[in-house]
Length: 134
Image 1 (cartoon, rainbow, N blue to C red):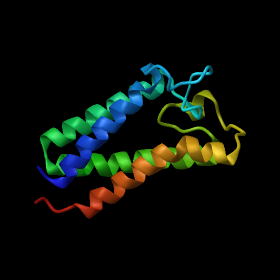
Image 2 (tube, rainbow, N blue to C red; image 1 turned 45 degrees about the horizontal axis):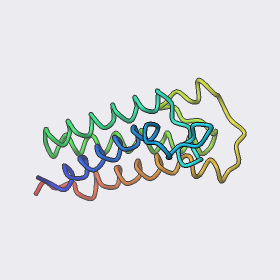
Image 3 (spheres, rainbow, N blue to C red; image 1 turned 90 degrees about the vertical axis):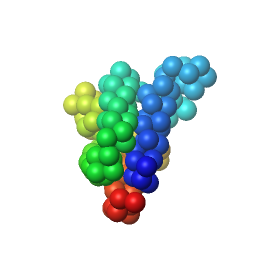
Image 4 (cartoon, rainbow, N blue to C red; image 1 turned 90 degrees about the horizontal axis):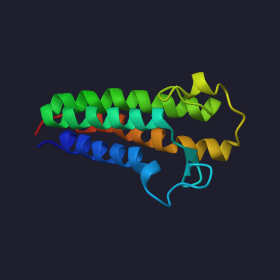
């Protein structure tokens, strides 16, 4: 098993955990925000589960499929986080369509979009760093 396949498995696990945040007692506040920062809705849960399935299937199939997953996932999530940072709404969960541009404090935007920026950036870098199948 190559490093990229292991990384894809790690993404599958992380994304399944993200999808489960709303369903673990004590992790959401009275307004339904996970860790008091971001509200995850059914669109977010479906996005995370679909992304986890994509990661798991890629890891199962091959090094090349894992590389493709990490590259395209990285671009999609990094761009979503950047849009969220700029506008307060991302596109992957249809937030920009449902809520439009939101006037939110910049610190809040950073905290709310850091997971997608971080996951996307690490995935994109990993797809290039561990390019060789070993």
